[in-house]
Image (cartoon, rainbow, N blue to C red; front, side, top):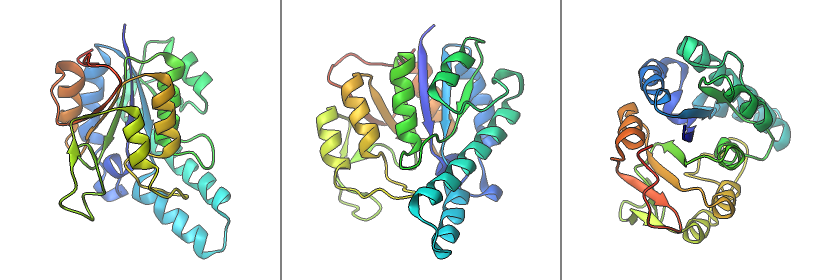
Length: 234
């Protein structure tokens, strides 16, 4: 069975506790998991950034602020696991080795952050490499990778397909700190380059987009790959 790793942005799943989309994502993830071995890495979202902002106001260093953010990602992951019920392995994986071990049970494996200074996108990129994933999907709040931040420059160019080298060129211009909310960070981009595993960046604000992409190969987004072979559908 093919393996797919999804980096599910916290800004998509839990922008705030009051505006979460967990209920919408549960049936979609359950449906996808019937066709492939599924791994989901959950971000911190708005709640993590709230905690990190308070930490900074208290003069807490960036490394500790990152650790606080990691705790929130794992709390979000715990809530998703509980909502998925029997479809998910009942414990949050706290390392890539644990995620591989948990996947032997044939259930959806969910994890959050691992290491300070490393985003959940980077966690997901390494996980895709460790498990030999067919595809690494980044479900975010934009419909692909742009030449610039489209929220700041409406005239930015969206790419349908780019190479890992072009991705590195784009993300290398962005800064990284605790609670960073870029489309992808430099560590994740470098792992994508070395692993050769195709990355698909797509709009995750509609959970149905994820199912259409993985199960039918239909999506509006950006494929990051050296080759021309389509990584989806599974």
